[in-house]
Structure formats: C-alpha cells, structure tokens
Length: 79
View (cartoon, helix red, strand yellow):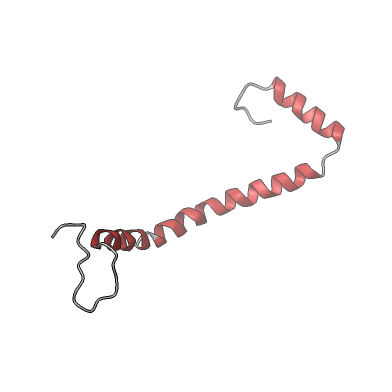
C-alpha cells in the first residue's frame, strides 16, 4: 500500500492520508512520556517562580550588591 493512499472504503467520510492517521496515533501514544517530562520540570518551575517573586521584593541597594558579587564570581559559580 502506498502511504499516500487514504485507505478509504466506500462510504468513509475521512480524506486524511493513512500515513497522517498513523502519525496521529504515534503522537497520541506519547502522552505518558509527556506527562513524566512535565512532572519532572514542575519542581524546577516552582523554584524559578519563587526566586522571581523574591527578587521583586529586593531594594535597589540589595540588587546592586548582588550584581556586584555576581561580577566578581567566576562564571558558572553560584553566589
């Protein structure tokens, strides 16, 4: 069978190619994997959101001091 054929029977109302339908099954079958990946990212996302919320409450002198400290540290080293 040619993958560009629709695989239709008389009376079928779909005009999607069989290959496209097979691709949809493949994508739909990855739901569990996508949920696991998302679940693994959620703690990191919460950490980022908490950090951003804390940064919003800093004073100008605190921000300047932190930026100066970051400039003095070697790249990639956490403060």
